[in-house]
Image (cartoon, rainbow, N blue to C red; front, side, top):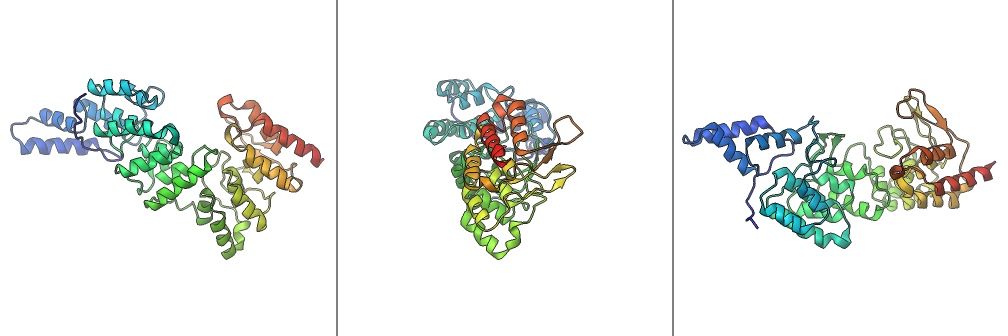
Length: 384
């Protein structure tokens, strides 16, 4: 196998103009180097085979990049091998020196994102090998998706986050522009679609806070307490401000159903935080509180969020809500939605929304399952 070569790290938002200036300075300092030779030398220092490859990598990593470069649709062999934990193939690719710096960084991302603690030892061996060959823990995935640390939040990989931090990754930066808007490490984990790994999510958030991660200003202390599953802290915050129970948060972020204008109870149901749900209801939160209607959309009550969680991950939350508080739930309330491609908003009851989601969503991305629909149908029939 080839010996690992130390490589320079590109910043989060690299500048080709800055690199060109570096090459010119290098050429001026060494009069024997022509500019093209200085560019080649600099490209090699960043782990690229030539200047054109370095320029292409910078373009793919810069805000506004629209080309598909080393991303999910057309991944390169090294990241694919890392995701598949194909150690012999990884060794072969590294030995042949058939990779770019971005391949190394994306490969490191795939190693630390995908899997769980049961196979972490195998994934760590791969990550260690990629780091030895110059993978950057602050590296970019490409095409303006942002730093690879973002993927650990989207997948809720606590072990992956901890590994990158120990390797030197920065998690303290404020939101940066990405393909999907302004994001930071904290915003990525708070915005994940996953609803079945709350214990891991709580540990992930705690780890970010421990290492000084930026908390978006719209994630107020009670909202953050819900995301951390900290019912005790949530209760203390309510004791100091009872109006929190009724307040709607126009800028409340995230949610499979948009949470703009929702209450804390909506938020707790959206993320399946049952201890926080119990705390809010114990202190008098309205189980039928409507969210604000913004631009003609909204008005949903918390139950909509309980059954709008991908692939049945919210079944436990929905069952809890119905078993403990079914008699208090208003199944006749209508919320308004605008379907993709339609200008006219559509009013739907909780049951109608669940039926629509179960019927119309793609099989791999259903917001509601037949089991959830059956629960809601029984509840609606008993309410008549």
